Image (cartoon, rainbow, N blue to C red):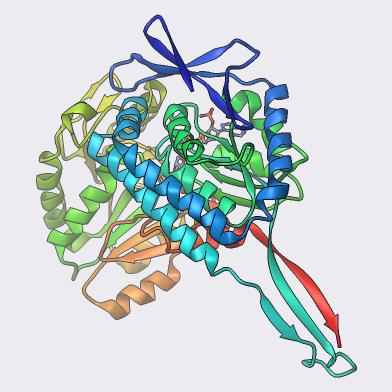
Amino acid sequence: MQQVLDGVIDYHFLLNGNWGQSASNRFIDVVSPNDGCVAGRIPAMTKEEVDLAVQGAVQAQKQWGLLPVHERGQLLLNWADELAMMSDEIAEMIMKEVGKTYSAAKNEVLRTSDLIRYTVEEGKRIHGEVMTGDSFQGSNANKVAIVRKEPLGVILAISPFNYPVNLSAAKIAPALISGNTVILKPATQGSISALLMAKALDKVGLPKGVLNVVTGKGSEIGDYLVTHPSIRMISFTGGTKTGRDIAKKATMIPLVLELGGKDPAIVLEDANLDKAARHIVSGAFSYSGQRCTAIKRVLVMDSVADSLIEKVKQQVEKLTVGMPEQDAAITPLIDASSADFVNDLILDALNKGAIPITEYRRVGNLIYPLVLDHVTQDMKVAWEEPFGPVLPIIRVKNEQEAVEIANASEYGLQASIFTQDIDKAFHLASKLEVGSVQINGRTERGPDHFPFLGVKNSGMGVQGVRKSIESMTRDKVLVLNL
Ligand code: NAP
Ligand code: G3H
């Protein structure tokens, strides 16, 4: 699946069981955020090659969809084992390609193995139902409907850079267990890790065409893919702008879109502030804030703001800053334009009077973790998703103001509430316009079988193992007229 040229590895795409190079003869450099070196090159596939991939997946689905679920499941279990065996190699590449620490990268791969195993178990329990026709007056009592679950066909899975393996497999596994075939379009930055993940599946004997991995820039091949007439469903995770564009272009097919977020942590007067500070810092700064579910603003009651901020400051000052190879907590952002974006948000806030609680420093793509106090609603950082290590703190008078500011966001992925009053927590949770509310814990997607969704500009449809399988199947109704 690769060849070495001038010390740089050229990776091949996976097309109908073959690892190949593009007829375009064009390669895209995948530049490591850590040292600016080329981690490898991926082929820029042509539209003709993309078309071959989709047609191959259509053909492959005819057989794959007929296999008994336990046979599909066994292959996926073998994939999970192979991934675990390749976890060191893949973690090395995730570290190089997207700047995760080795331990976080390895954890991503092992989490993915577990997710696949659980998906197999859940897939075996997806049954249809039987309905009788006697619920209405008239002559329907002789009818019995057998409602079966059928695959949709070819699923297009588009994944983001920040979980190149986990968020690809979280689409592939539910699609395959339910009898679909898959076209994976990984993020350009993250493609090599995704190709290694596909190699694990190829190694255990995946029939040709059941998973095809297409590589190339989303801006070049994306439109062709999402409007391809043989694609039967799109499962996309990425930025809101890209998701919205896809939703406009893809017509008459189901979409699951998991998009950006601006998750608030709401801290009430009676909160355990030590616990809140711990969860807020880990929620905001893990993987340098490059998680859709990162805590991206704190809404704290004025009366406890000083105490909370002091505790947050102490925790943030313990975060190490450096390279993933050093296992630093804060590592360089994915690219220079992302770091520029975060820098602009910070400068805007500082110019408008935000108070930095920690020292602001930037060295290339490396942004030191920054907590901003006294953030006000006229500052961009109060509303925009930084995808970087900056945490705005907005002081509020009361719970109602916290809910108003939380809901004024265009996003609605998750929210955290910190309080010792469980009644109050449930009351506030019912008012928040988000997919999930975490009570006394950081915002996060896992465990992977929980439903995971965003509302408003954070997405549509639901992921999480069972929900993903359901989104990739449809009902087929057989009516017996007795
Ligand atoms: P992105 O720029 O939107 O890219 C996501 C994927 O879409 C990549 O594979 C990208 O390919 C592809 N793409 C780009 N343009 C396309 C087009 N016109 N048609 C089809 N595909 C296209 O997002 P990202 O920078 O990788 O990830 C960061 C964003 O994702 C953040 O906003 C984050 O909040 C969000 N995210 C959300 C979740 C969630 O579950 N809610 C999870 C993770 C990340 P290229 O790389 O080739 O451009
Ligand atoms: O970046 C978005 C991911 O779905 C977040 O997953 O909460 O497990 O980090 P996580």
